Image (cartoon, rainbow, N blue to C red; front, side):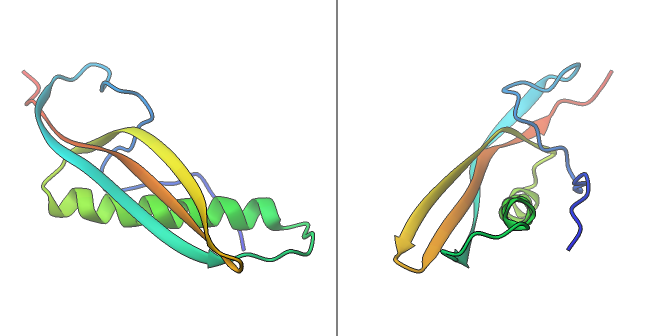
Amino acid sequence: MSASFPRHEIPVLTLETFPGREIAEVLGSVEGCVTRSRELEPRADLSEILMVTRQDAVDAMVILALRAGADAVLGLRFDTSAISDGASEICAYGTAVKLAEQG
């Protein structure tokens, strides 16, 4: 498993604004969640597994943003919760926006 710098069809930023661009329309919040089994044994590759799992959640969020017609997702955040003794849910969420035309 090899993690690399993520690329998406639209920009995904942790910022609340898009530098150099105006927001034309706020389409609403988008969320992508994935569920993974929790392993209780220590693992050397756990950090990489977590990074890939977060990326899967972002990918799911981007799909919803694209379906809404978004040009970007702003305010990216993550949330993690235990949903059972053996599984965790990782969610990526943000605000889908349409950007104003550059003029």
